[in-house]
Amino acid sequence: MPEYFVVSNSFAAPFVSDKQFRYATGSTPQEALESFTEHYTHRRGLYSADLYSSAKDYHQSKPPLLRYRNLRPVSVDKQFHKNGVVVPGPVAVVVPGHVNIDGNDRM
Image (cartoon, rainbow, N blue to C red; front, side, top):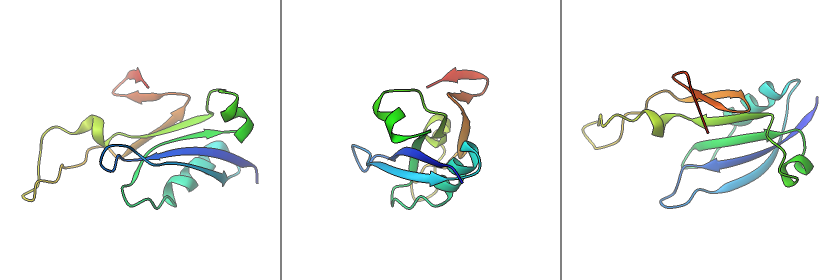
């Protein structure tokens, strides 16, 4: 199976996120990114991940093949549980090259 390079960011804990560099395998880029997100284990959770065909592409500032963004921060609408924890909205989106939220292209 092909190997892909992944650059991920955790949710901020509390002010900055932790950046990680990993490799993921899959028969397609989509499969590799899905596998990476399923096995991500940071205690704050996965905020974003960009998948590249190689580390060289990342270091040469080439665009990622796929991007993952957790939509929870975008969809929070001031609803709270009794303990004050924000109720999460849609979990995530994975699309080639950009994020599409409610029909609007955003990065």
